[in-house]
Every structure is written in structure tokens, then in C-alpha cells.
Length: 88
Image: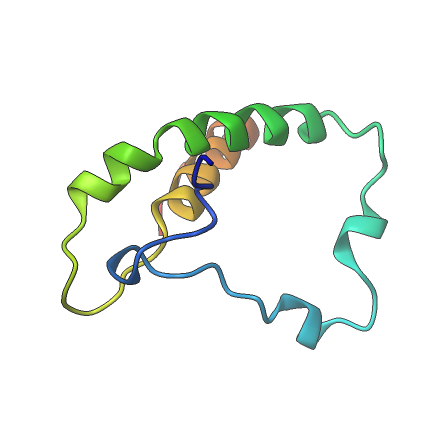
């Protein structure tokens, strides 16, 4: 069984499950099924899943958890696609 990039080790951080807590609607329902980012997201998710062994090797097993690398890389992809010039 292959590990998903969404199943991080302690040091790689965990995806935040709380967004549904802040919204009364599901955000996925607000995005059209034929939106151009949906196939891009599927490709990026597949690539990040292939990178799990590299992420495992790069992060220590002890210490304070960080941001999941998959989340950070997806944010950079969106910045590139939408020409956002800041990385803050």
C-alpha cells in the first residue's frame, strides 16, 4: 500500500481539517465540476504522493511539527498559475 502525501509523519505536520468548521457550505460544492484547476489538482496530488519517500527522508522524527510540504507546494503551484508575486 502506497502512502498518500496527506498522511504525514509528525514532523511534516498535518493538513488542517477545520475548514468545514468555518463554513456552513462545502467549498468543493462552490467550484464548478469542469473548473480548469480540478485536473491540475489531480495531477499535483499524484506527483506529491510519489514524493512521499523523499518527504519521509527529509523530515526528522522528533521536534516541532511544520507545515505539510504538500500544502506548501500546492500553494506555490497556485501562485504560479495566478501570477501572485508574493510568497507571504
